[in-house]
Length: 399
Ligand code: TTP
Ligand code: MN
Ligand code: MN
Ligand code: MN
Image (cartoon, rainbow, N blue to C red; front, side, top):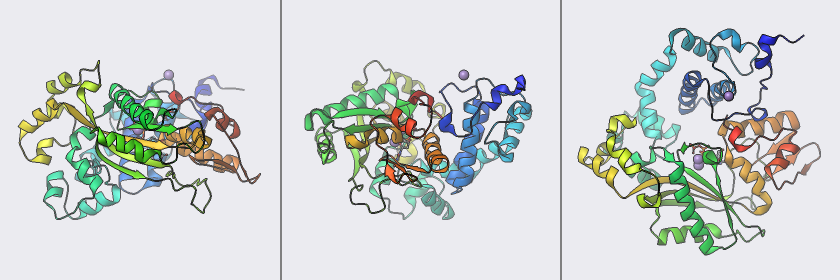
């Protein structure tokens, strides 16, 4: 006895990794609202609330038509009372009063501005705000010593807070490829993160590097970084070595998102002429700083007046955040799955593995607690199969 009107809703499974979520979102008005509340919760060190809002938003992203009535939400998973109130408010008033209130709050605005600096997390921002620091000029006038990442990121604040396009991502891909090929021919480079999921823009560009012969990838990162540095492509980099082998608590750490691969957080200096086919410079000069939706202009950072804004837009390069990760081929499938995202999709995969399958999934391995053994995989498809999940391709992991 299937109620036809409920059919669509009742087939939405509760874990995001059981669903296909494309970039086509029919409910942005609701998911934007819920995502903003999630962001505010995360910035306020309330991760539990943050996840709840993220899960609610993800359910709405998976629907194939716009929600026009609360009754359509009957039977859908992950929609708690708070999320439902927000959705109701949007349905009835066109906007959520809580969201509007949050957006306008000095606290939220300050948290956004300060965490817009790469290397500044919620805790640091919170501490600064308590000291009365709400803006970048206030931060610069304060006595705080910034670490290297924070300094570099502050210097390129505007560039780094402007979305990276796919064309820019591809241009960086070519540079990274050249670097890797000249230090280790035969190595393989894969675009990961949001761009692998088909996103048209991102906050950074992520690459996974491996070599078909196990062990050949060891020590690769410092060589790649030296090559890039010698050609002037890096404005900042911090390389972390692989800590997986020496760790004592086993390879799969289900509770943590951080992995132990050799990796490099960097800021690239991308020449404008490296992205052929894009009209970046023209587009930018037509926009006023207000139109770009940025919270701060370079003039505030450099204190040089609006002149510098114009010059910044005409400069022959831009700064782009780039993440490089090196994985041995034996862990490649896990690294690929773990670094493709979305962040919620990853979190849900690990939760599914732990709660439903008594397994521990990380970006290194999959451990079966029942059989007390690691399950090998050389493709993402095999990992989904081990987990008893239908295979979801990257373009449908946009939860
Ligand atoms: P991000 O680059 O942060 O996110 P994204 O690429 O999905 O989004 P955007 O387009 O805005 O850049 O992270 C990419 C994936 O890497 C994400 O699934 C989480 C994973 N990741 C780790 O596994 N470990 C880490 O330490 C970090 C920083 C990310
Ligand atoms: Mn659809
Ligand atoms: Mn990314
Ligand atoms: Mn990244």
